[in-house]
Length: 210
Image (cartoon, rainbow, N blue to C red; front, side, top):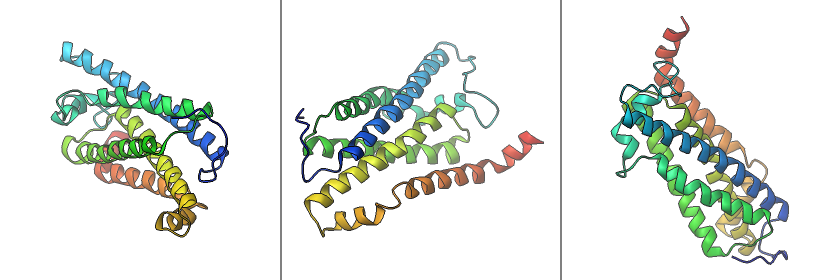
């Protein structure tokens, strides 16, 4: 990591860095708050099995079944601890970028691996929530919602960096194609998740509204 703020010919424009930094700080802060709240609710549930979590709204929007499931601790500890550990690193990354620091290539590679793993885990959780557990955890969905743009815009930033270093390469071609529609794939992802939720819980939603 370097605090030298002089521009690099191979780096994306400073405005892009600032936008990414703000996204990382805001998105990860929301994710951290949701993860922390989930952990608190999990502790309450462990200490009192009859406890009704604050995120339990109805039969569909209910954190209890999700937090009590085996999937909620797939690594041997509560999943929210992953967010409590990971989101502060993302916030710190955004903060140093906003301060004008330049991060080394190895750091960006590590960040890309981390956000890709996190986004992949989100997809596994979405599948488990919809088709195995059968309930939606609102706080969990907040984590899903912020992990997606963090992954996507870190990926775009890294593609732009590679494109600047290697004009004519495949990353350059992909980056150029996405330059005019950077948010479209993300919007499509949100719509796809929404459609999956509606497909899975349509009958339940209709029953609740009748």
